[in-house]
Length: 360
Ligand SMILES: Nc1ncnc2c1ncn2[C@@H]1O[C@H](COP(=O)(O)OP(=O)(O)OP(=O)(O)O)[C@@H](O)[C@H]1O
Ligand SMILES: [Mg+2]
Image (cartoon, rainbow, N blue to C red; front, side, top):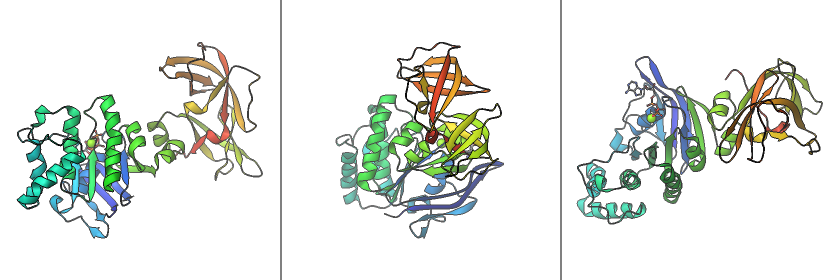
């Protein structure tokens, strides 16, 4: 199956630019997630790919074929909508066969295609039910079957799990990924749920205000966010601004000094002296040291701080620690028992600190 390629895709609604010159290459058989906050342009991007919206600028290719001028039913795309409404007055069989009749699939083939697809989503025997006679999870699987029954070249899924309870949503993540991989179908998945994106994607494109701010594997997006939006939207990060005041000779490390004169050692990357940088630090990468005999690796930072807020999150304790004029979030296991105003030492390995450009 061919890959999907968006080139300079732009869509405006009046004065709103919903999708702003998006370039995206989705490989054959890949599941790519568009992840971003409400209103960032995810659904609009999908609707342009499906052909329900005509972009103002840009091209959409499936393999070598431009799809920009094709009507939706000629694009070979299966779509699961954000509100997965099945047609309530139609049986499951009619919901599934509708798209086949639209594409003039011969009557003799329709029944076998519907049966095969129902088996794929493990709902054989449900053909004569009406949507109201199905549970939420079953309705969701029928919506997926309705998208798959036309044997699409590309599958588009717009927040397909948003109406399900937490437990079912978690199960369905794995089911969707497994099905997509078994069928080898190219897929674009839309969500604003970071956990969902991390679990089921080959790669994630993080969107904000109509643009893609970073594309990468779940590991890359989580461990090496390259801008403040990504670092803050996926997982938690504390941000610290500073200036590069030292580069060691081997250029393995740099020293970044904050406006309140705290020096922090970080990986040098491609930094230059006197450059302004923002450091992004994950709460789970900071260790609180109460025991002064604890071993500290030679390249780690040791900072002094004071506890200002404590939140119990069940599996971890979330501390807000004041260090100079800024604060760091720290997650520890639930064995620590610090109180507000306690003085603590923080240990942060240099290589765990992400450098992001303050401009972005
Ligand atoms: N038909 C429309 N007419 C006018 N403005 C629209 C239309 N559809 C979307 N928009 C606007 O375009 C922007 C992007 O909307 P879109 O539906 O793509 O967001 P989204 O990322 O899917 O958000 P959500 O997570 O809430 O579903 C929003 O500002 C929205 O108000
Ligand atoms: Mg949407």
